Image (cartoon, rainbow, N blue to C red; front, side):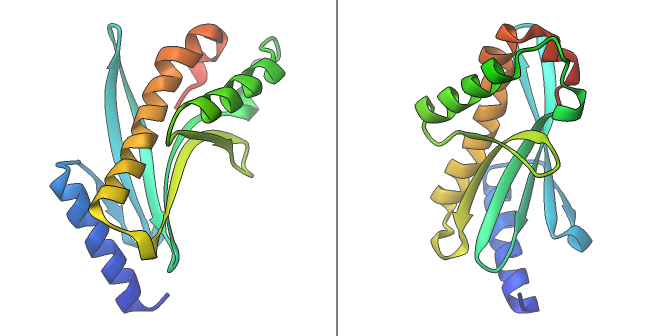
Length: 150
C-alpha cells in the first residue's frame, strides 16, 4: 500500500471515529487503531478493546473476547462453539470467529472501495454490539468463562 493510500484510509477512519465521538489511540507503526469500548451489563462495567486495521483493500474491526488457551476443560467446547455459530447466524451484522492464535473474537470487515461513514459505522457498531451480547447473553450460559474474557 502506498503512503498516499495509507493516509487516505487513515484520514477517513479517524474522521468517522471523530464524527461518532469515539475515543481511540493510533499506533502508526502497527497500522492499527485501538478503541477502549466500555459498556455496562447489569451492575458490572466492562471494557473490551476494538482494534481497527486496514490494507489497501480491506478494513477489519475486531474485538478479542477470550483466549482458548485459558478455556477451562470442564466447559463443553462443542456446546460453546455451537452457540457462537447460532448467534452468528441469527444476529444481523454480528460475526463471531476464532483467529489462528486461538482467540475468540467478534469481527466485521468492509472493503475500502465501499468505505463510507454509514458502512463504517455499521461495522463498528456490530462489533461493539457483539461484545455486549457475548457478555450479556452468552456468558451466563458458560459462567466458568467469565474470568477469562477480554
